[in-house]
Image (tube, rainbow, N blue to C red; front, side):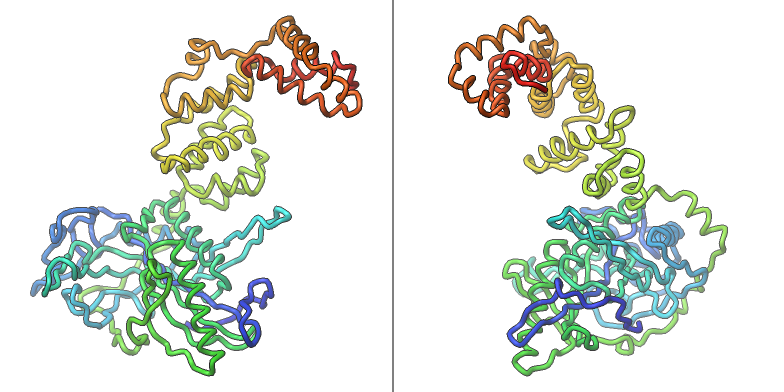
Length: 500
């Protein structure tokens, strides 16, 4: 692709070196496994975790005379992804043979797309922040292309002392290679890009995004330059399977390249691997260029062609995507940009929130989902799909607060009970005597007792009226948090002669 610099150098992203400032340039090639029951060119299963070499057809094993047949669902998934990336959908594309030796690629070549991919240029908008002023910075990252290709198998070198084994279960699995433009200028931007891309394909249902299973991984291209100069020589960090590792790999590689250049050396274009245990990259092989692969159209596959009706039918069935959902949450529910961003980060979280917020105050629902539910799940190492508190249960807790049945403090205790024990919130409140005390006579008695027992504090309040909050806290403590906070506050102020 033609490299075009679309970013104005930003000093806050510069990396200080011994001889001056440097700028890191990052582009990514993300391999996303297509969500499909069968492989790209065969009917073999794509189910993860099956015994070695059990998901292998004659086509995948490249037996003589076996011909590839395109999987229509994989084509649809690629088009859906392209539409989600606001990209150009090419109604005619070609499959090519990419020739290189791989011990776990039985054909001796990979069926991919070179000059005519199924999806052309698109874009992703990432959001960095909030900064100290609570502001977010939106940055547009260009997408160069998305093409379909088949995955290779897996070589295993730790099964035998002198031999390597090959598992072909992944051989022929459909991949979408999503190639960004070199538009990222920091490791934070790269992590935000990968996070956003993963979110989009998960919303679309075109890739499960399970990086730990290898169904989404990134080749990260890193180069450095003096701000405003031409692009430098890039190195590709291969198969990074964690967003955190992407950031670490970029930080290390940028520093490594800066060190070489400042010492008067030059950067060799090469492919490198990231070692997460050591937090460093190491050389793997010299970097190939396109001509090294001797691409040519695959003679066993006709050009892939479809019409506008095919694209429009897929477009009509697309779900609401993260950016649109975030905008709606801010516009219609009055959420802050930060809260909306957290809630739309995963489709399952957004769906949970919308179930809780239905018919209720959006801000209240957001606070409970973000601060209490997600906080509890983070503490226990669970994700939203494993939550022990259903949207109906959390909604019931919010309803009990609104009805005045329980106070906010009691609600926190109730949430913990539901989280650990389950049950119907209303029944738990009734059975455990957790109802809020709204009887002003009982509250007044408690206020009088606290005031009478603390004459020194009464004198302090006369000098500093804000000290009244101490009495409110003591009354709430004395009533086990069951007293209505508003009634307590009003009675305390009245008894102490504090004007509103």
